[in-house]
Image (cartoon, rainbow, N blue to C red; front, side, top):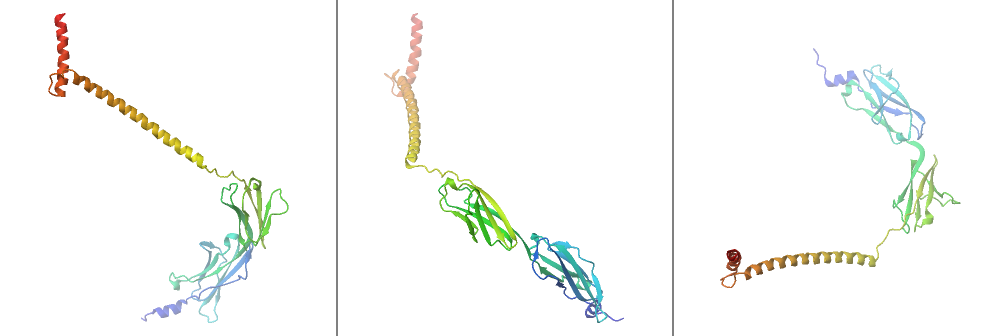
Length: 283
């Protein structure tokens, strides 16, 4: 019985070629529909094609099969049609070949697409909480494809416009209360325009303590500490005086014939009790 080698097995199966994607010509506009085609030849039996956009599966037309001129292999093709959004800008559309000869290996081709869409914008203040006397920059952050090329600044109730420039920032070197109001920024590209608004409320300048106020605060703290120390000294002196008087009183009684202070205190206590006895005796 003949042994089938790996080489003969590959020849029998017919490995499909890497797929080719066609149909993409130029940038697409938002909400525009497009159709891409995918083709792979050389497979036996006929391979199958699948589509995806990033991790999302796209449902294309069923795979079409056509016999190659050699009469041994097949060419397969498929198409997919979808509508693009601004989130599809920069996305990759992938066509993959599925065939048993690949043994799980990936054979695919990708097509990156570009989507043109109208701009958006938002105004960001720097610093976020402006105060009178400070410098303020209002940044009009425009996004889009293409990115905005022109910025028009206006203030409600003010004519003419404040600024028309390719730079996105409106700068106030020195804020004052009269700068308060609602500002508009119109970001424009060749795909359209978008207007953003920002209401500016100029806060009072930051309070800065004077040197005299600082000295007053420090003096108050020092006076409070001195007051606490005086109270502690008075209490300590009162305590010491009371204990010293008690010692002297006990030492005076019976100290005439006592050899030391302890004996004098004992004699004093004994003498007091003896005196009481004598008083009761004579009564």
